Length: 123
Image 1 (tube, rainbow, N blue to C red):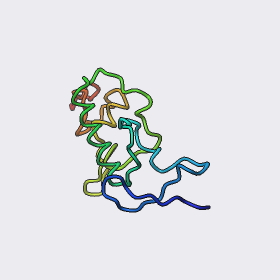
Image 2: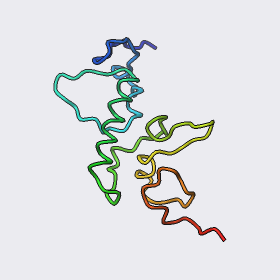
Image 3: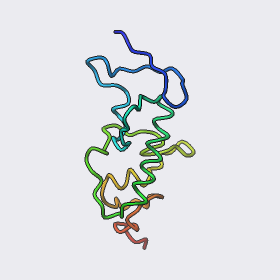
């Protein structure tokens, strides 16, 4: 199968793109939170991850916890540095992940935006 090689519109690094093929490109796994601008071309995985992280941060700051995150912003697979990060070999879920989840799970997560409302009290 042939892949298209593009250069990132931000850093000019070459990367593989599948958007011209019958399958979905790797970029479709990311939440569709980045506004499209006329004349904007594709970004490499690193630059796309950066701009999407910035857009997510802006979204979280501008929208209260009670705001339901639109379905188009949900990604099907967990993405490192977007939904979670690794710390000492353990997954730490981000506020973005918890907000997409929509409620407190009661596990005392570090980035819980719901004030731990489902936490069981310690006896």
